[in-house]
Length: 322
Image (cartoon, rainbow, N blue to C red; front, side, top):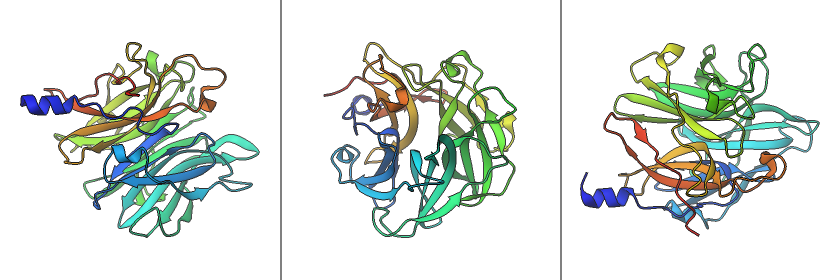
């Protein structure tokens, strides 16, 4: 790496990028725009914004594209929306519960055929039906070798803990066509603090490998990112294809006052030459009450590099720049 490239790789982006937006998702589309969404503190709606630069997202105009229902399904605690472009249409995956059962989350899909997803109308395509009906959230989708896959977090009543990660092939962006397969469960010490959680998956491909990051433990300073790795030619529906890193790949940093980094996504710099980690974190450790209702999980962005062995090196979460 040249000295100039090395300096660029250390450039710190504005931190926070977007305040009070947890579970941040950034997609750089073919139109050159960066699209952003995330959980709003009220958990009552889905917002999108776009900008021609990553840092432009900070002050970009927001569009409310969907609001929770008054009663019934999708009427409470709208969590972790993600925006995907599949087959020429836009899709939003999100989790939602009911007013009378605020933590009975299931996964839902919206569709929009407009060129700009901040415009046009969003159609509810319904709930993603999995192999059993239980707490489920954090759906993400990726294409590989001509197949569309879904990865999500779900509770299995037969397994101790809160959520495991599952994968399945898709018939269309809201329907599974294969049986779901568990690819990780919370079992390591760092994954089971407060809650036994694997959630918030994101997919990164490079050098013949598929890296799947996820987050574990409660949503306080113990929250951290882990990673699974699969060879791109392997059967992604075979749990044995996925190798789990035994230590977190991104975690709290007292020195920089950054706590609970996780629920990430990936994008690239404007010139396409730098890989960027999008994640949320707080700038303090002590939280009063339930961490879910502390609004200051801010969306953040960090350039990351690659190790000699080809694995991503996320480094440490950098300090706030303001």
